[in-house]
Length: 233
Image 1 (cartoon, rainbow, N blue to C red):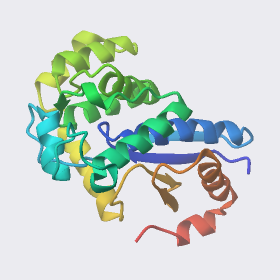
Image 2: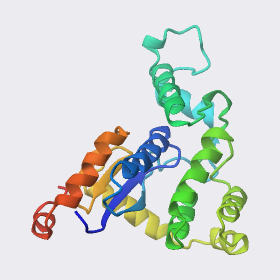
Image 3: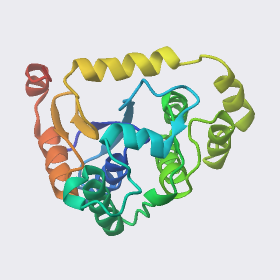
């Protein structure tokens, strides 16, 4: 198990389960220090129909879940969002993630945020970008669809702000992001986060660190012949 492996994390930046998944992936890698693991971040859009300028968060969530997320009089058992939010807040506390859904105000389109991750990853800062974007959105309630916010985040993680701002003004790598997202949908990814080891073995969902570590071990134990035979349908 000495060879280097890659774990591709397919995720969206407005997906709270994906922030949990990222924290658990990092913990999983710590559980298997004998395996050299490279993380590659891949884009996914939970809702590509969101306008480029984004939408009011509460309006969006009301349309998505069919109920007013501010209506505390409703039983949690009858309100899917209330149930999901409670679970996320509990899981987040365990992972050191300060989810604060009450103060969310925007539901952005994430194309430009994925572009920033793509550029950051090219400079070895993909993980920094993912963490900074998740924190900006879920903790600080910043609009990560806003180009000025994205340029600020790029500068925060050590990228050249002027270059990022200039790239965001145009269409650079929009096709790349769309092509990658479509590729993983064609490979069978229908929910995120999804973790794929060497394009051969996958687990979907915010699995425990222990289960993701099992994926890493299974990936490392594959022979080149196994990897050539096994693929995602």
